[in-house]
Amino acid sequence: MHDVVAIKDQVEAAVQAALSQVLPAELADTDPVVRRSDRADFQANGTLAVAKKASRAPRDIGTDVAERLTGLTAEVSGPGFLNITVPDDLVWSAVAARLADDRLGLTTPRSGERVVVDYSAPNVAKEMHVGHLRSSVIGDALVRVLTQLGADVTRQNHIGDWGTQFGMLIQYLDEHPQVSWKGRGAETMSALDGLYKAARAEFEADPAFADRSRARVVALQSGDDATLAVWRDLVAESEKAFEVIYDRLGILLDGGDFDGESRYNDALADVVDHLLRTGIATESDGAVVTFTDGVTGPEGEPVPLIVRKKDGGFGYAATDLATLQLRVDHYKADRILYVVDARQALHFRMVFDTARRAGWLPDTVQAEHVPFGTVLGTDGRPFKTRSGKTVRLADLLDDAEAAIRTVLESKEHDFTDAELDAIVHAAGIAAIKYADLSNTRTKDYVFDVDQMVATNGNTGVYLQYAHARVRSILRKASAAMTSDGSAATGVGLVDATLPAHATEKSLALTLDAFGAALHDVGVTLEPHRLCGYLYDVATAFTKFYEACPVLRAPDDAVRSNRVALCDLTGRTLAAGLDLLGIRAPERM
Image (cartoon, rainbow, N blue to C red; front, side, top):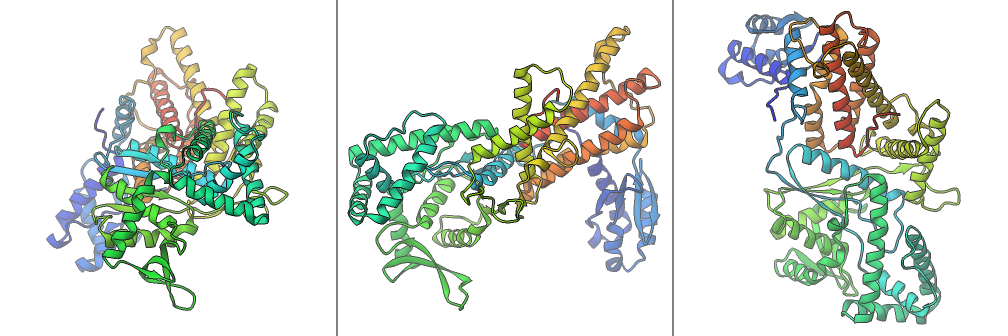
């Protein structure tokens, strides 16, 4: 791995050094505020922000700074900001350095940081539905990006595998032995989902069955062998079904990441005892609760966090508190991320507060709720089927693949059936995942499959097409340079002495910002920033390719530099899409 310092970082360092020379010592660490500009390569606005503190006109400061910048061209503009142009050889050298590195020059600023990411969390014996899409997709992207940035990431899938509902379902299965549900592959979860609904209906209609179900819960909790055997089968079959969906979606979660609620059963009583003993929890109407300062209801009354319910059962809060302890003590986490629906914000606020007061969540550990909005239908309401039912996740994937197949089959192609099937799958998954990830995480978004599979605009399929287009150019360039007698190893060699066309430079500077985009995602936990960056890359490449012939470049040196830019573009798009959990086909 080579140390590649981003050009923007070099510009910031140069402006910072110049500012420290022209400002009083107490202002020497002034932020240069450097960003890309459409009037030059970069713009530095730090002079404006510091002028009042320095009791000087910003243009005067800007002039002094410009005179002290070495290796860069700068001019003072407007009220006093700097327009900065970097030399072409610096740009070409950066392209060459990134191409020479398997990691494209990306650094690992989070090396040594231990992160636990809690995401997806479906329920045993229930089908995964549209409500699981966002947590699964967002959580997985964060896992990939944080790992790329050097963090030691532990994935945890906190599945719902315990609770009173299992007593009801197991009792129903026991009383209906003729029902077949095991070993049915993809249909297993549909069968269990239907059986759960049937058990619920009988529970509500038949008091005797309800009593038998409650007795079954006691048997489950007390370790009855026959009851536990059925429960284990339910969990095992559900986990198999979940893994089928994860594999299809390209989600990293696997069997080793399941972290069921049942794992924490033995710890829950101690959680409650500790909270009561330390005075953090109190008894209220028979329940054990905690309160968080500033959390009140509509009438100003304190809102309780229920740790143990009136009937002696434990609330979700008890399990979440036990989970936090394990993640701090066993996994030694520095940062714990909960990728969960925004509607749970208050719950997590209170859980984190309780854990801090109990000493289970040290100040050195960050616990963060990573909230997300709701998937809406085209009518602007939460996405449902026409009959008002929750949409199965598998059906969403089927719809996306069917839509993209229609698009692809309408175009001329020479793919075999197997090749077309592979591309349809990759593009269908890209359409769904990118539509989710490219939207601001905390906002709701509309699930519009026709828009998702569009081959132009800011879609995952468009980015896949952009990557395939680059790969096609590189194949043709390689063939041409071999057939005309040039050495194949010469493809993409960079001559840093050549002048750069404006679109070449713009593309190169955009590619140079890959690390900064990933760093932003690592800090903000907002994958849409990476999506926006990749779209910028594809857009910059289109402008470059329209202005700068690659295969018909005026001479070999220019062609080689342009091929190098294509190569870096393709590798950056592929790497970025992979961090989103999206495949980048060689051909589309």
